[in-house]
Image (cartoon, rainbow, N blue to C red; front, side, top):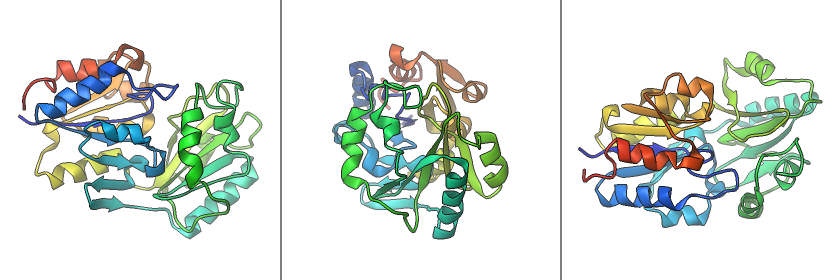
Length: 277
């Protein structure tokens, strides 16, 4: 039976130094050669996707935590936060001392100092863990100043000096927006992601399956972060990588080895994606 695999990127197949292992690349290629379909399902927006990803035989992509779904030339979903929502959140960021980046299909709008979060990666506790130089090179052509009229999602960073927290943001906005812990590791402070309420990787996965006339029972979802929760929960087989978010491991059907141990390749072998469909 053909299987549909939905793979998170960061922390699942892309490590903190922005590298995909040869074993995971081989597993993805073998699975698709054998007739299965493998999809990117990422919190990243489209301009954050490295061109090298498209050298792998993915069957298309879910981006921005499910806000934008593309299958070939067809846009299956395109959800966005409107101008009023962006203005409300931006006021909140400024009052709380956050730095942020609004992420759209074609452009990014970072606050004045947000990109230092990646420029100082590996050099400061108040920055992303690992080496993000490749990421910065990828996104810079898409960076604009100002505030967008709409955006698929936003990521913001709260340093220890900020007057807010993830819990407060969720309490204030959680009934109207998706507000979840971010998937980028940082030693101090908090990274938070926000998006359209009711839109997530799980809803996008179901839209893709419906498009192909497939059922959730055929789906295998693999992730490591809070933004993978609905996708892992709703797939026929939901898999969390060792070392990922505790919330995810509690609902997963199987715990795969860590990314350093090629967890995706191990999951593909265990659940038949390396065998003919």
